[in-house]
Length: 246
Image (cartoon, rainbow, N blue to C red; front, side, top):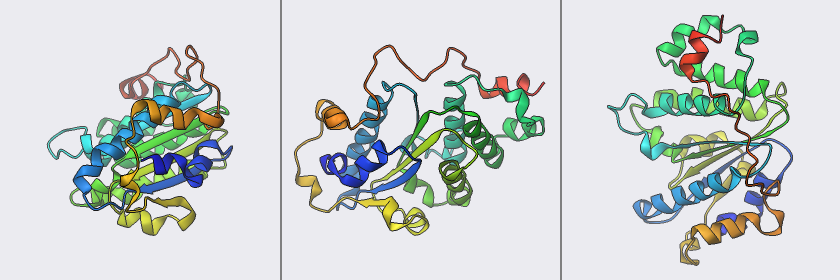
């Protein structure tokens, strides 16, 4: 996974002043062996970015959401989690959003409603950087998840492309194997395929990952241990539809 951290395209994604989307594809032979490595890379990235000022970090590890019996599973659980994370990081003026009509959709866990709410919240953010790291999205390209894949992915891509938002959104999809939908949906410049022989490089540890992410000022901002993009105000989705629309 050192190859990813050292690649020019990944460095551009993390350093650029503009919104961006990047799909990282594993492309190694043993898919099961790569799952921990790719997830570990995403975990280290999330951990390092959280210490940056004026940065909000959202994440979802899809391997923990592919149980068909769990109420928070699947793509609905993912977009709900991302929305909840965003709500915990900023004191939004939900009363001005005129979204009272969404109450029923939020209560019923409607993916389209949660997607619209996510997009509106992104538009309310100030000039900050929002990193959204999604690991294992290709797990949802099979039944029963695939029916919701396109609209939710489009919601995330619209957040990246939005001209209404002051925030810069940097979206990272990481897949241990080829993502058929995203590989077709995203332009070549937004795809980063790991060479098949990249697994022969030295072991990636938390220390080496952090070193790669911070050397040469690769991260957007200097680290500040007491500085966070998280506000003390932490409303849940329940707060939004019970209080935020009044």
